[in-house]
Image: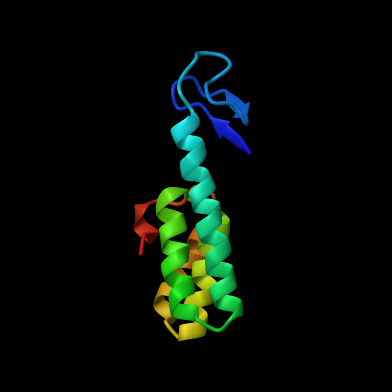
Length: 105
């Protein structure tokens, strides 16, 4: 898992501090891990038929890490529960790498 240093912009692979500037990255790495676990839990919920739980987990993952995967999960889960307005917003965020607050649910 690669973490981009917020101080200098260098991509770092599985290290606790930036190799260029020494910035502490452990907290960012942990946040990314939690976002990934939350996303996996959301996928399991959707597969098991609990779309409402999948929406919750997708939003939680999105808050931690603005990933297209979290947006796609939220899109699919909102489709499953029939909330097409939210599904449309999440779809826009899942395909637009330069999302902005205009789309935020």
